[in-house]
Image 1 (tube, rainbow, N blue to C red):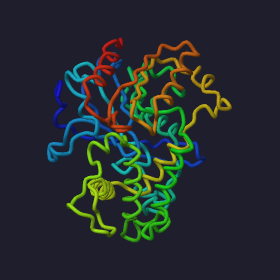
Image 2: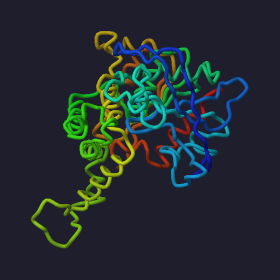
Image 3: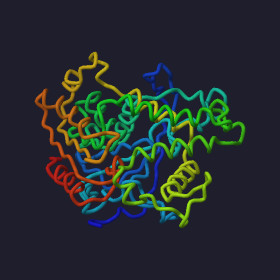
Length: 374
C-alpha cells in the first residue's frame, strides 16, 4: 500500500447550542457532532479538506484507535502521509452526520423534551441540513474556506451541495460515484429496504429503544438488498458464481449458494452495529436530494451558483450511479464555464469501487489534489 496510515487517532465531540432549522420544518434545539482530524491545519488555515461520508459511514475515516487496532477507518487506504489525501500537506476532517448512530445527535440520542431517546420523533434531515451543520463545525475550527470538500456516493452529493450553498467556502469539490438526484429505480430500492425495517415486529413505530429490542430482521434484509446494488454482476460472478457450500442441492431454503452465505453474513454484521432509524433517515435524505428543484429542475441554473473547481469521477461497473449520471453534473458545470475534470474509471467493484484501493483511481485523485494551491 503506498504511503502510510495516520496511525492511532482519537475522535472529538463538538456541542452546538444554536438551534438548527431543518429543511423539513423541524428544529434541533441543540446537537453534538463527533469528528476526527488528521494532519495539521496550517497557519493560513487554507489546507483543510472535508470528507463527507456515505449512507452507512461515519467520522472514523482513517487510522485506528489505540485500544482497537482492528478498527480501521473506512477510507484509510487514501488518507495518510504520502497518500492522495496527504496528511503532510492537508488537514483532513471527517464527521458523523446528524441523524447518525456513531456519536453525533441522532434518533438514539436523548430528546431534551422527554429525556427518552428521540426514536421516530427525530426530525427528518436533508443533505442541505448536514452541510449547514458542517459549516458550523468549520466555523468552530476556524476554517473559512475548504481547500476541498469530497466524498463518494451520498458523500459526493454533500460535496455538490456545499458548492451550491456555500460557494465562497469551497475552492474544490471532488464528487465521486454520485448523481445530481436519484433515479426512480434507486428510490424504489430505498423504499423496499425501508419497508423491511418498518414492517419488522420489533420496530415499534421507531421507538424500539423503549422496548429493549431492535428490528434486526428488517435491518438485515435492508442491508442485504442494498449490498446487492453496491456490487457489480461481474464481480459477484467472479467472487461467487453459482458455487455451492456443499457438493449437492439440499432442496430446501437454507443457505446453499456461496453468494447467499455472503449476503447473510453482511446483513448480520451490519445489523449488529447500525441503527435502523438512522438507516431510514439516511435513505430518505438520498431520496430527497435534488438541488435542481430550486430552479424548476434546471441543473444548469442551479450549478451557476457554484464557484469551485471540480473533479467528477465515476466507475464503469457502477450501475446504481452510472457514469451517465456523473456526466449530467459535468455538463451542467461546463454550461456555466466551470473548471471541471472528469474521470471514468474501469473498476470491477460496482458502486463500492469508490472505497477500494486502486492505483489508477487513487492516481487520479492524487494528481488533482497535487494541483490545488493552498
